[in-house]
Length: 158
Image 1 (cartoon, rainbow, N blue to C red):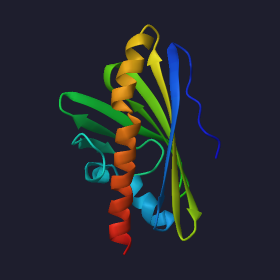
Image 2: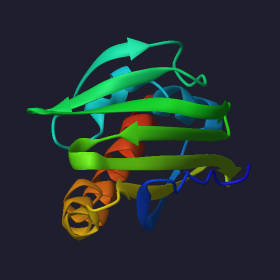
Image 3: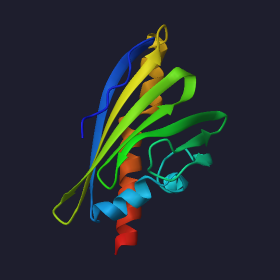
Image 4: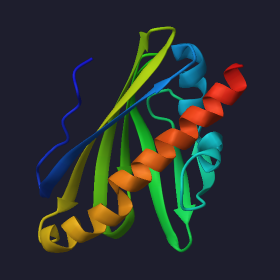
């Protein structure tokens, strides 16, 4: 899979963040949980409430809304190649948009889940963007969420 590249018309590209985790489970099992938006509250931080789920999980064009308090974000699947590659685009809070390219690769009896997050903001928001991005896409929170996801899947795989 080629990592997807968001359009730069009218936006400022702020950054690229990369995360990964190895999970002791087959890629198919990891995929099923990873693409299911109803499972997000089980592993993401911030007590997300998922609603307005549209389409079949993990299929291009499907989408859902994630609410955290008064803030909401819509995530749409851009492309999917089960159980290996998923690209989503999220229109998030305060003008933040980000694309997540996820790759699942079988290794050593388990699955490497690699994430590449490309962020962008509307022009004129760059100064605010860096501050908000650090809070919303914090590496510390990403690590917690990936550790939560790993534990969730490994419990079910045993």
